[in-house]
Amino acid sequence: MFEIGNSLREARLRQALDFPEVEQATKIRPKYLRALEDEQFDILPGQTYVKGFLRTYAEYLGLDGQLYVDEYNSRYVHVDEETPLRARSTSSLSRAGPRFETSVVLIALAAIGVVTLLVIAAWQYGGNTPKTGVPDFSNPQPAAAPPKTPTLNRPGKLARAKMTVTGALGRSWLEVYAESAAGKKLYEGTLDAAHSVRFGTEKAYRRYFVRMRRPGNLRMTVNGQVVRLPKTSSPRAVFVTANRVTQAAPRA
Image 1 (tube, helix red, strand yellow):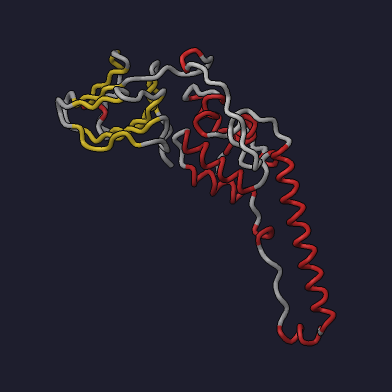
Image 2 (image 1 turned 120 degrees about the vertical axis):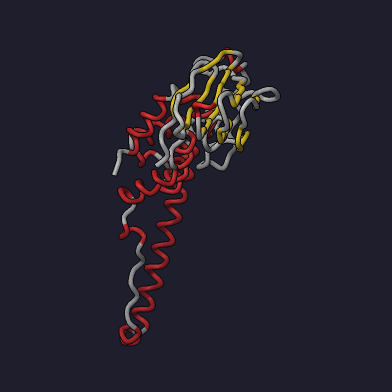
């Protein structure tokens, strides 16, 4: 067992990320991101949204999304809530007669009414939430897009990075993803000595998620500046931005 909220918060702070940046990448509103970190899951419309947002947020931070969903299920989803009522034996049903059948119909109608009320409440909950330009999965009405602003001028945003990785001392397996481990895969393969791969020449990203099997064999430059990589032959995973290189959380 581990603390879901504290683990997410520590991973975000370790990568120097703020809520607006995470919102832009994951399409999850800041109020829901804070609720996940505070483990106030009742703020979200329902368990389906909790699990979906939890998986998306964790994988964006380079964590194992399924591990967080499993932990949530073990702590907050009770078996009794999902176990249907046991049917009586055939002999009991035959003895009950029409009165029992009438009771079953009434119970079924009551259950349908409860489900209908829950659906309406969830719809109204999403409709009363102020729009921020991010799609609201609980509201059938599309949210208006925010006005466009140059990325480099927005407070808290990271500059876009152009990265080059070279096999300086030998071969090394290399994987590169845009933004996070769940982002678009930009490269996967063995980088030979004296060979280089470049990222950001056509489209530059604010952040790259990089896995290296032998980081000590590689040399990396970001926006023309040489950055330090771990001098080890053990596998490593790091986040690379225009300003820094930070170690990613180990995979569970």
